[in-house]
Image (cartoon, rainbow, N blue to C red; front, side, top):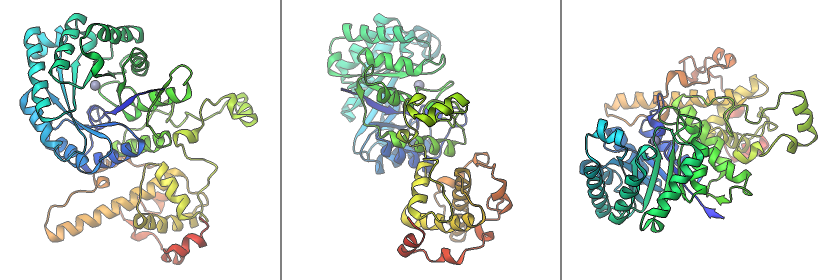
Length: 453
Ligand SMILES: [Zn+2]
């Protein structure tokens, strides 16, 4: 099986979509999840774009050590130098340089000639290469670029030292057969192309981003650029979970492998929509709320007789929590911790203790703690913690890094639990209003045993 490099751009292209901007702690939290998910490359941001983007790339580069960390730069020295500065602490840095090549972009946006474009691309790649071994080049709007000129630019950047050449369908205009042919054309006509990785970057304006990405792979691309939940500019980018699961479910047709830990797909999706406050459409493939729901009688009948009748993959294979595992007051920390992870929350022992104490109180009052209750509980605890941190900061008069959850949008809560609201968990009164169960005070290992892990 051929190995495909998964280049995740949730934190860069994804973040550029309306309502999806993330602050530094939020990006850092997401980057850790992308690491657990097993992506090969994390495009962490566009360092010249803002101080926040610079800080996010720097912070991620410092602590996320396994994947390659990429920083985006326009084809000019100040962008490239800034990107390199942000990537200083990275174990495996990559500079990703882009420059538009289509006549429409050259004429109206950049106001340069093809010759100037070619020279600028070469110069930019030489500079990037002098700083970093791993250099990616993207001819923006490649699918509307004159194919001969595209090949000329690609050949020039390969000669100048680019190690990955990404072919972006920036405006989501191409179709699968056409895009596959373009990748073949580049492979057949560009001298030296066999020494670099060809990548695809597709947008979903016509709903073809995933199909186009798979067509590019079939034509020889060995890296795909994609995002969690398919977020991204306008209609979004190719969805990571759809590309990966298409390969997993149909190896007979798509004989490629990735390093993705598919059980982390749902947690990653949940975490992203919680951070951004942008919900996933219910019928979204792989990770939507209804992706594994069967309502029609005939389907339910078939599912009960044998899930294979209507299920091409199991919910568990993509990390959707097992609904048969009910969380109630007899659940232990282990089950609670697992469900929290599936919902996109990784807690250390101490944090889980805190969630557990409040969970026990809640479970005493309602029989089954549903996912929405748990998410609301976690959010209330985190807000409470952020307020406490804020108070401490004010006392000391020292500016403090705002924790990820403090900046959560007010509309991002899972506010449909009337029950919890009446308990004033999310009313702003904080957790002081929670009556603490005496049992909950015993938060040691013994308790795990008592509560039946
Ligand atoms: Zn894009």
